[in-house]
Amino acid sequence: MDKNVIDEDEVFAVNPDWSISVQKFNDVKVVIVDDFYKDPWAVRKLALDIPASYNKRIRGGNPALRVNAFYELSNLGWAFDQLISTYFDDVYYEHPLGWVQESLMRATFMVNVMQTDNLPPIAPHQDNPSKINIASTIYLNTPNECAGGTSFYTYNDKTTYDEPGNKTLDVAGKHPITQYITDSIGDFKMIGMVPMIFNRMVLYNQSKLHTAYVKPEMFTGNLYRLNQQFFI
Image 1 (tube, one colour):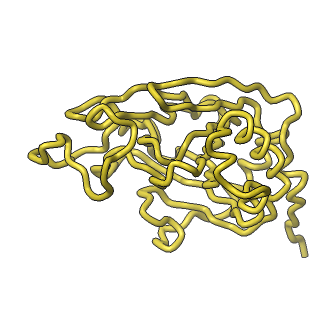
Image 2: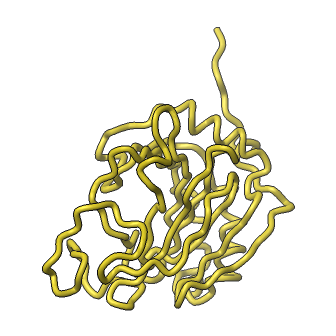
């Protein structure tokens, strides 16, 4: 009998030669870490080997399919702790000591698996309105598969929503959302986009308005958008 066995410390090892840059879109800070994983092909293979699910308990409110598996990810804690304490110190010190490591100990191997030929009508969103939590996206598409990225927005000139709930294209509430919003439309203004690059990790505050920047023709047929997610 052959049985696959995972060594999480090896598969999820961080590349010691990563490179870091920072972009600002209005008051949205985005930290970009290129060459994040030491062996991104191993992480990608794991994402492809585990079936993605339509199960709403796994997907939450996400329109994509999702992989969600329990693996040991706490070995990534030092990397996230270093990045968040350095570049998001205003968030970092709002929490008790050790909170990043504790979050990574609870984290799962979560990968959004998305196609774009039937995009639902969705507005840019907040992962969490708290303003003291960080989101991370790691792109697992190979270079020839990459398209679009992660885009950021203002709504009524603000990078967060004043109130939760369903949004309309205009703050007056007269025009419902009938498309998957990527480019500027109505009171939504796209203020920046970080392109998808294989093994690129993107960090941003969960309260900032963002979406997967995709177009209907980008991920179709046997091509899927693969991005690993962390919510810290």
